[in-house]
Image (tube, rainbow, N blue to C red):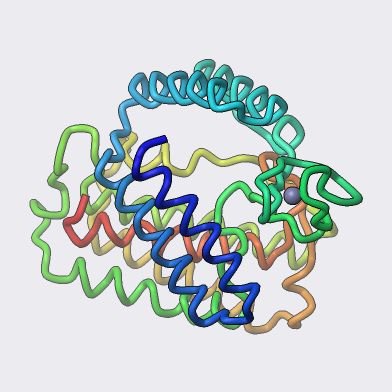
Length: 286
Ligand SMILES: [Zn+2]
């Protein structure tokens, strides 16, 4: 156990003990310290996207987790996920169900009853979802960001020349134009899904490789202005559909090929948080 490992476990233990004293406003700073240190350490390692590199790292981490005595069922899911990624296959909720962890002792899984190690009720476990976007915003917050985020994109892109917008920072990174095409594509997918969930009973939503469309060659070259125009027009309609819907309609459901049953709220929250995450690539920070 090295120093970094011990500060993380000490912070996690201290947070639970300070919460046990009812000092939640203090405990949140202890949790923030833990979160900050962990993310800063990850950032120092870097987020290299090279596919072979990601798989090699994944294999190395699985071996390390075996040595650390990680939960065998969790490890099996990781091995299965590795093989799927290697074969470039879609990993669906059927093969990869929700996974929960005891907040107090780290025990993995369990569908009912109490934690076999520390007695915590199963309903107190933290449940890990496919991506934080799904549960990031409530309806009011989502509407706020659906209106605000396009303005952020427009502000950041406004001053760029066509050359600047088309310049790739490195050959395997997106240009500003490609980022804009991607968020426009995502908006159009969101618009179609909102319509379907509001008008159909439990529609089936097929998996879309939206990120694969942005840098594909196209017949007619798209300019920043055209892309933004389609994005804004589609967004205005999406907002109108959601504003006209009853609040309870946000809990209408669909079956998503990758994620299983999803509520309209989860789909809207997902796309809203997703496009915020891409703003970084417009600001010149990679
Ligand atoms: Zn436990």
